[in-house]
Length: 100
Image 1 (tube, rainbow, N blue to C red):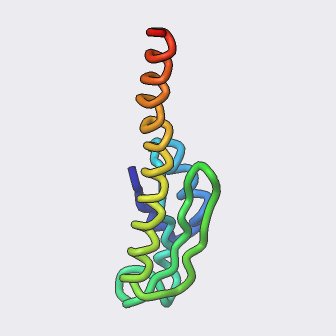
Image 2 (cartoon, rainbow, N blue to C red):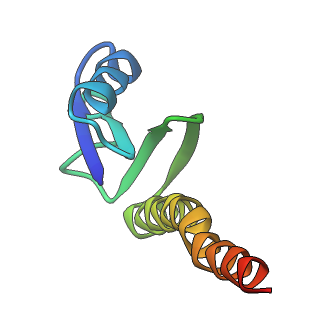
């Protein structure tokens, strides 16, 4: 689950707190007080925060920032699903071993 933290102070700290308290997979920290980011401009810069750390997305068009957010969310989803995908194969191998 992805959350968004539109903050005016202690941007990364407040966003990291939201990651924990809301049990999110990813939170996008957005400093809405900066002159070239936020709601009334065509550019944005955010910090992506997840359990493995944080990644700064430098100032870019909002479309580019959205693509970076989506890329990170997809990567997290794939990483989370990967062990599950391996479980059925491992279970099948164990069953075959016990059937011999």
